[in-house]
Image (cartoon, rainbow, N blue to C red):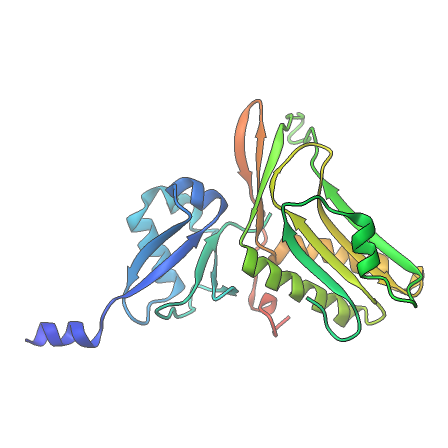
Length: 252
């Protein structure tokens, strides 16, 4: 009777864990169910994943976790029904100032995006576009790339893109329009993969620095990953940056 009462008072909670990139490949699924005690933390979740899926253990020291599409930390307490994501470090508008951000499988239309962030007062646009390299010089040799395969945790990625745009506006109030676009899917050498664009009244108002900040910040906090595929095999390319509390919306 006492045991039954304890079970009734402290039931296990079931966490649906969304998996991406290396972890998805390792487990072979994009989502799994994990049972945890009430009041369990992210650290407890990692331990449970390691116990249930031992092959993931090498990745769990550096893995990132999100709860309800915001970065979480080892001490974060989990709640039943929360949307929890686990992934490796990553490789909307406000007011009258236009902001475009999206994850897409479509080609990036530079003219359309530039027009979308151009105001009557705009006199300068700084645009950065990354693309797939056919060769990647690494450790003294140049492995060939057949294609890259990009994936994203889309809802969270779009929310973090909005955060990047908000941070740009905080630092460079004169920036008028901002576009942040990331392509996903299979992309071949020479294909644009990402675009950051900032517009302003003049070229000397900080648009160069703002666009540079935008791409650097995207690489830090927007959950997008790529798998490199070539004659020698395939591998997920992971970053090294680990978000801190300062990277959580409202704390940056």
